[in-house]
Image (cartoon, rainbow, N blue to C red; front, side, top):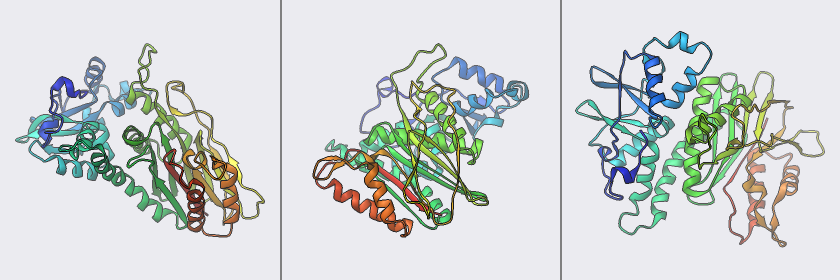
Length: 408
């Protein structure tokens, strides 16, 4: 059920336990059919997460987005309609007692992964269902906790930064394990930012994503929470080997999550999304598969005289003007040993600086890559960052800065 602070008359700074975040909600028994759940979601459009009970105790949580995505597939009505709803529920949701402190709840939510922040969590009382809580509600509370006495928002944003960096940390570990020679730079313009990255290692290769979401600061950070969670769900459903399909799935997920367009074609006030580049590297064939949404991939082959730009498509992920059925393309790129590659958001290219106060630009970025063609990716990335900072000088940072370079 959608949380609305004014409707529930919750005090702005006095929330101290999970019970304060608890919103009463409907629930279903574990033997409820999927058709009944579908009917409930259809009737209750505000219902985003549905607890499942067995003997009056919560055992799972059904995400509206995941459930509707599954039931919209061909023949799923016939195959699963009369079966128990446990087929599509999260069997290991975050369940917390109402007496748990907000601080402990925050750490528990981060530890349990992105799904608890995106799909919500169950609040219990004496082992039974009390209601549900939602990640955006929790982040809003966290963002205001440090401002309780002096209302200085920077204290609360600094706390939110801990959550954002915690969500990114597993990707850093995965990247270090999957790619021996790489450099990853993530610098939000503000304390929290609208860029994010995602890396995951698989037996056949590794997946990487760099994304620039709408907005900066807290609004941008909320968008990274939404989009990174949807990407994680898409990877679990589709696997990592088709970046174009993953872009399309994330785009549909963003549209659904933000309610950008209803069944009558009416758009909401949200026109948000992201620019992104998704990579699948297949170790056996040394082939990189790339799909880009308004982001380009830059390649410097060992014997090349210039840096090659592999352009993404000029269509953003999400956004009201992106067709719901839009399909991105995969580009298969065989990589010679020693190739240097760079993927960056526009925070690098568009930064104003230098003596003429102009954008850093793609040409200067390519020049640094050429100058570092024999260096390791770690050294090349460090050189690019150093050159960027000299160029920026005393100019204010215009955007979040994120780039990723690696050598095969």
